[in-house]
Image (cartoon, rainbow, N blue to C red):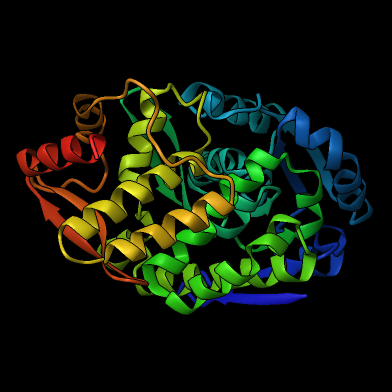
Length: 361
């Protein structure tokens, strides 16, 4: 087992990583308040891992109820979050209850948002089941839902009391979702760790084969980077924005496709290609470095190009609702050198011209 500590002053918590972590009552129980616990999951995950978790929780003399949400990003909205409140109220759960998210990023974001709001905040635990959630969305306390005009535009910061990352969950993950998670792994290398990028180049075949020890090492590396950034900038006033490399373009793709045809990691992969090419145009990367990035993304079986028919006007429409916009100016995360990223401010006109060029390269 590996443990990464998120050393926030007010809400410190551990991230436990390893095989069989989800069955460790000794690691889980200290982070449960009271006796009431609501497990939020979806039918797919529940069928695979719900019974074992429910049995474990009941063996700890807890009052347990499971609430299932529909499976998919398209259901990540206020309407479906409200059903979590319905479940909590129906079971008469009090302010010492715990909400446990068993699922991927969608489940974690929605359950965390509900935990942040119910009775103005109750205890929250993350048990992520996808690679993307394990390396990124389960850590750091960002929760929320989508709006038709923009991704994650409604939400709250809610830190978990513990993150339980069981690498056994990845054995049942579909290949496409596994690759989508690798996009976020590669992101961490690009924003702050060129040495990690070199390691990923050497070990991508073994990671694609889901070698447990290497996966745990990669997950721990990403979680440590995320923890360091979150501790330095919990509420995204500065450095934490760097974690959004590729996300401005990626969120536009997700919004354009209705949150249904592209996985988040797939959209981010294309967004990172666009960010790398734009970084090269502005002198931050050499062409050879852009090609290295593309080769690694291809080795992870990730897409390279935006959806067919998506125009610069489409990108600008959705990027106009991006959360990073301040005073009408777009803040993009670009690479100023290989393994190092910074926030770059562009006017809407300048960005529109750049996107037009990127789509016709």
